[in-house]
Length: 148
Image (cartoon, rainbow, N blue to C red; front, top):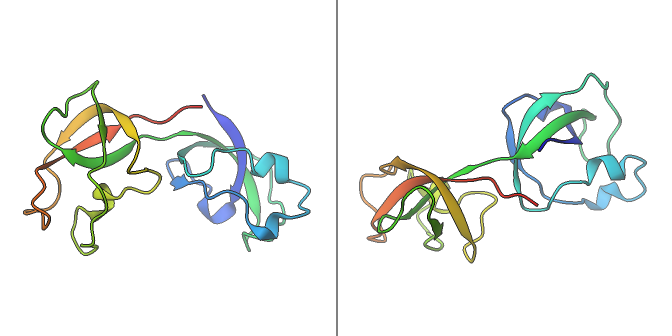
């Protein structure tokens, strides 16, 4: 289900994904708080539409904000390969110190928690790395979007 919110004009393109970070100290006293601070903190969203609302001044976004439609977004993640199939639930394996690894963004995807199980909607296939430095047997999956 779509929700209308305000986002920095430089980010306001259909298809852009972001993790909502919540309120900034600069938001105090803003007249647009209710329209802007209406998402779930830490959740990943995808912009599905833009509104012809013009640009509003913002203390956080130097270029101002504009109205967009967003929906919770799915995320790609690496999980242990045993029992990973569409429809099952899985959790992330845990932190990985190898930030230079091509799979790091999938082992620690933005907007995901290590202590949470997520519904797998699709098994995508092999992860981007050739060898896991932590000797984990991983597969790349898509977690379905979280909903309220």
